[in-house]
Image (cartoon, rainbow over all chains, first blue to last red; front, side, top):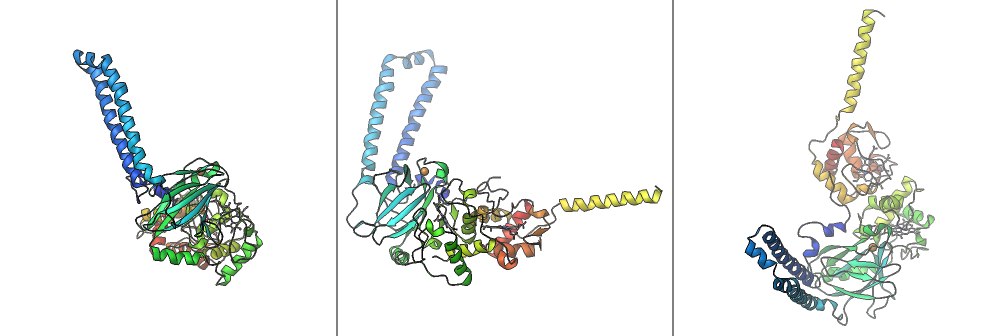
Length: 327
Length: 123
Ligand SMILES: [Cu+2]
């Protein structure tokens, strides 16, 4: 018996028709049209080839002679493909030209940096810089119905950013900034996936894009701008101590928690408000947080966070409760 | 060895065989639960991040014990009797049901825990 996929991001690739063929915004729609066009054309060509094959094998002698004719080979073997493929190229380029249009002034900008094997996210300030920008990871929230500019970069090797229902995939190349625009026409959660092999747990490098109505988005953004909430109960307070005693802050930022300023791993200031952990692969709750911390290497082998097998059950409960409370 | 002794031994062997037989058949079940849904919920909340669970290919967590053969297990956690009335609350909030447990409270309703118990007892 096989199980349904647990990974939140692989949901983006399940179902029929495949999500890559069910667009949810204007930057994905032309790709769906183009895909169906290519499928249709390929189907027609396949039918012609099969018909010719059947004729050549079982047809009447005079018909066989006709399809063995030199002229037909020039027409059907050379002229026809040149015309069809050129037409397809022109149609495809015109359909997709809108995808690379210049961002409008004042458009919201998000910088997403591919890291082995997760995504660093910064909501840029109006000047396009990171000063005062809200930092997050593995999840990008956008307002419904508005185009958003993504500045795609890489911190190490080539990754590729792909949210099939919202737009084309675009590589993240070290030393370059590639511009991608996405828009979601309906509120909802859209799965994404790294689409360029980047080593080890590449297949477990997913993300989610969450589209929400403008007013909810603004309220959410205001909360994200705030420092982490102080623990409200004894268990979470103990969890903060576990976090500090075990050096988690050497790799993770928790704005407002002393000493938590490391940049090697995802920003955890509001980790409790995110849909997933482990880069889009696990749902986010106290259980999965504890499971990840105790044995992230068992879940995502080769990732750059060590498994904390030395924590006692109590410590694990506490640190998971603390992070869960960072909403 | 006299006749009665031999009969006694045969009876004892039969009784023992019956006992071990009882241990092997799965006596535990939750007829009111929906096992299919139980499996789906375990996937949705991520029990696999800590347990290897029959029917779940990934992840197969190593933090807690594998959950195969739960129907035949006598005790759960630190030594609670393995019965639906103990397992269901345990799945929802282990630290309360079994103080000191390393398994965190899970975001599932009683009905969902019942479905999960039905699945685990069947596999
Ligand atoms: Cu990759």
